[in-house]
Image 1 (cartoon, one colour):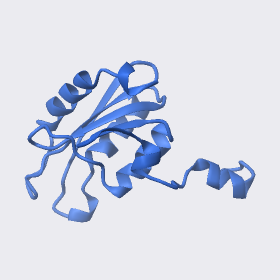
Image 2: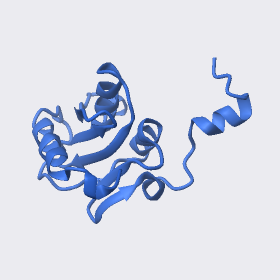
Image 3: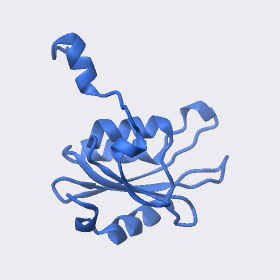
Image 4: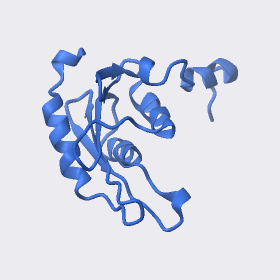
Length: 139
C-alpha cells in the first residue's frame, strides 16, 4: 500500500479525537494515535500517565494493545498527534512497537510527511533476528 492509498485525514481525525481522552495530569502533554490495520480497521490509543513516571503508557502502547484486543493484524499506517493536532514522532520504545506490529513497510506520518518504518527505525531489530538464532523456536 502506498501513501496515496491511505486516507491520512481519517487517521488524523481519529488521533485528535482519542487524544482528548489522554490522561496526562503530570506533564499535561496529551498524545493520541491512530493506526490503519491491513483489514481496514482503525485502532487508536492515548497516553496514560502515572505518578510513578516510569510506568506511564505511551499512546502507541494503547494502540498496539487495541490492535491485538480487536483481532490482531498488521499496521499499515500510523498517525500520532500532540495536543495541538500536529504530527508527532513516536519515541524510541514506540518505534520498536510499531516495527513489531507493522514491519518495514508500515508508514508513519511525520512533521515532514509519511515515512516508512525503515526510515523511522533504520537497522531495526525484529522477530527475524530472534528466529535466526533460535531457528524459529520462540517457545
